[in-house]
Length: 251
Image (cartoon, rainbow, N blue to C red; front, side, top):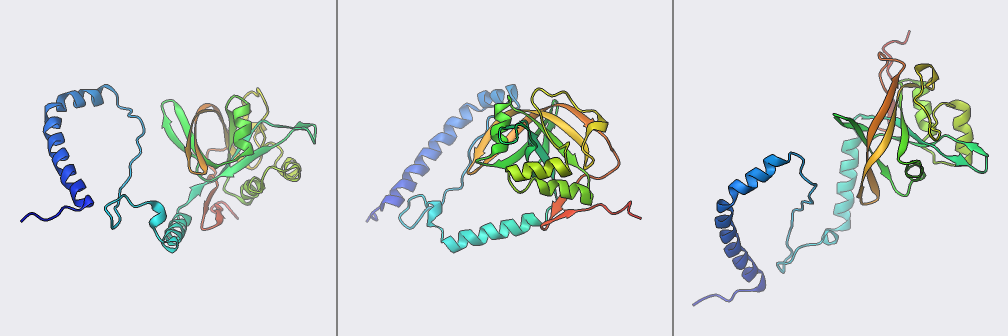
């Protein structure tokens, strides 16, 4: 006597038959697939997911997880990543502030800056939205400057100035304490002597791609030019809620 098939069982039975047929068809088209992959080594981004099913044989939604479980995972990931050193740079974009009637040092400190490739030089960083800095970058045809800070109290102070938002008060503080951490429209590349004293290098970049992930944007940019003042001093980084200061040369 055949057992009654419940909806979930019928689904998996049909899936098994479909998968068997697909495997047979795939063996006939392997050559074509191999040719396609060899023609292009850069493959478009795909969205992958691991589907889990609930007691009714239906895909389980993320919301089905207990809120406490989700919070615990978020906290665990946060604590793990706190132990990983991250580079800290300041990204500035050209902005004219009507209230002050001049160009101001609008920008943000980020700890997600990295290279994507060197052929051609391409970099990336993550930024939370909405963002005045990202809006200013877009408004200036994608142009922005990356200031690589030195691993010193001066570099840490400069980074901290760009963690408190882009307000009139912060524009004035930055102009007073780190006046050269700024971008202007249609600017030429700075010379080494024109870098802020808290920076060891700078990169002029143009935004190439944006990828939205929840409330963040992954920004990818091409490097147009660079200037280096110091090749010996370590760059500023961040771990466990603190800036890492290089004290090897301290007397």
